[in-house]
Image (tube, rainbow, N blue to C red; front, side, top):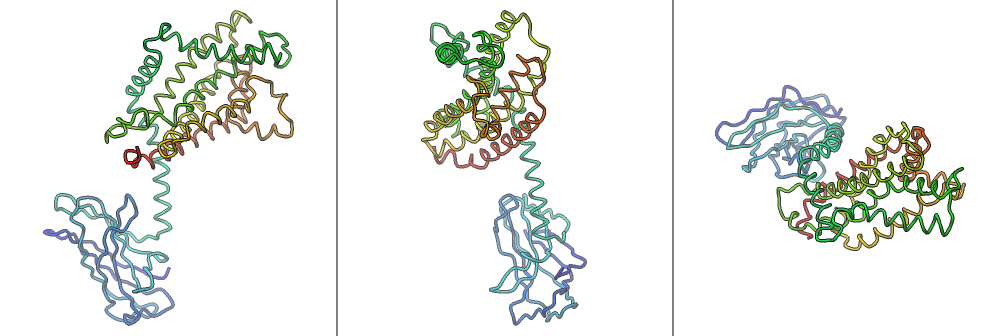
Length: 408
């Protein structure tokens, strides 16, 4: 430590936005601090929300040259900004035209709040930039973990309402109405079944029948349908709801969330059809189906995180919607949904197995068709990766959202 601060005291002024900071400064370095060399004691005022300097405080010359081990009293009168808000004062030695020593030495930190002409000051704390950044990182990490969950819970009724309106409005005025929610994925599944199950005669495992292929194929489509539906629409969701973007009080993060919830509705209908078919063809639903929630939670977290990322990026990159469609098609065929895993090249299997949809598809088939729990090792890794994508996707969206209205 190259500097010491003894007996620090902070005294707010009663009638003006000013602060008096007194302490005893000790030179613990190996050099002499000479006023003729530009050594001063100064203060900078920061905005704690952005870590930007908002004002330069006073700079006071040392009352005397300080040799190593010597100390001197310091009495600073710091004028504060008149704009109400929170401020953070860094008090430390500095050398004119050279540097502020708080960048590498300990400094005196004072948190101040200005409101209604009154000043509230916290106790002075001796700290370092490194320690301050560690605390800031810990707080940011806690907010990143808590804030998205708290936002979703707070606006759960609005999400439910928007998802219901999205599902109903998608087919409003059509002859079949909400039945298209079942009919659309059913027609898609029948198309793939015809191509791979009948024309190419693809089969899974030890079951060479077409019924066995249909069950394995449908089980693989169960996680893919809501995932691809939400991701396919995510890049354009903010552009489609540009009127909401202009409203300062509207929680924009629920727009992609409502699409994910609408995709879960589609998955719910598809699961009901699958379970009915499973009872007809095999006579029962296996007890291992109780593992489905352990697969649905990381599926939702992964989908939400990616949707937030794509929704935010789609505001700035308008071509993303077209590129995204191609990438989803590529992702589909890199996932063993309509063909068995054995068809994949063995030397690339370890890499392709890192695909989160690969884990989900394998897990759904294990729980619904093979009567066993999903493999634990890839499942906990999926949970960890999905949680990370969820947090990072929300952080990315939250960081960019302040400029959405200007770009749109």
